[in-house]
Length: 136
Image 1 (cartoon, rainbow, N blue to C red):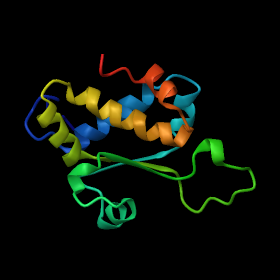
Image 2: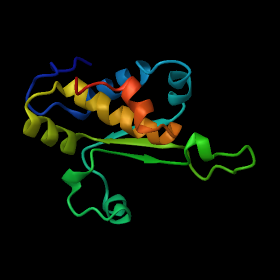
Image 3: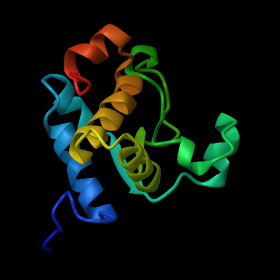
Image 4: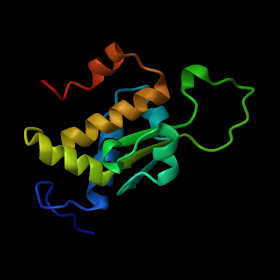
């Protein structure tokens, strides 16, 4: 499948997903090896249950979501109920990208992906800043 250029109008889910997967593969080791075992889902919008659980009214206010137990809180005795999942939401990301007008779409997608994986890894803001320096 040939994907449209990243600067095209209304990039499709497949392009956002490719950018998100590239962001995961760009994580430094040992994080990359762990991150590839997390389910990565790209959808247009979060579902109503997600929004309600987070107390968010507008689906445009949520660009990504981590569902799972952070590695820093897991125990070998835990019985997994569902796989850890990082959700990326295309339409809210595109809306933010348009509103900003000063950041590349791939950089914004990477920022959202890193932020959501930060929840999985239990990273601090300082940890995130070492990996995600997109604002510079």
